[in-house]
Length: 358
Image (tube, rainbow, N blue to C red):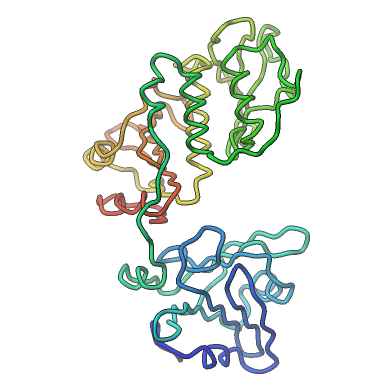
């Protein structure tokens, strides 16, 4: 039995797998599968697409990984053979403990990602050693905030260019977006043509070719909730139309289309960010919520109706927070950040986070 945090040499680490070993690489990590155990050895890194420690509770193996690795981690995750996790640090390889697969993603028979629960979790000082996090790099400007009141459509364009700085070089095909759509939706499609993430990972804005008539023939369905429980409609004859959330009964969003598309884009950028913090299962009391929002800048738009009514947005450079008022002085919070360093300070506020990638 190896004690957690013990230091071993790489040869000794690999020998834990036993005989008949097969070694391969996955996302920069060495994976050794043998008759006695599996061993995963990574560098001390902090990059979203590279294998390594993700949090005090999770180790993330990034693929593509070999069929042998997939068979051991995915097809036999609860088998009798342990998965030993190590990280190369100064002086040797630090033992993190046994990893238990809790999530995997596969495509065409290939393992693309496998999250392993670290048991027991790592202390903060150990986390800093095995997953060193540097300062935040240059982060997107918040200049668009001051433009929202005057021209939300222009503000959306500046936000999109700041949050998605490397658009896909794809020219807009003439006629791809009908000219009779409201200006805000035409501009959104222009931006999303080179930034397809803007169409949504959680909910989605329908491509222009998929717009359809709503229950009211004057309206067009232009957006759908992720489980298709409801959708959003607009009257394309209006310059900046009311947005209708259509479920059991219709309710109007507080912002017209131009503001709604800004809110939609903020929410999808947040959910697609690599680093997340969630306070869902234990609602946050008002004093802690106030402490959080005092450190952020409020987005000057009236509350959104989804995922709970009312929902508001707050931002900082490289970070978007969504807060939903549950009543009785309690709220839910979701934060998405482009760099771990932007998220880490919010772990010290005393909020009981359901999950926290800082």
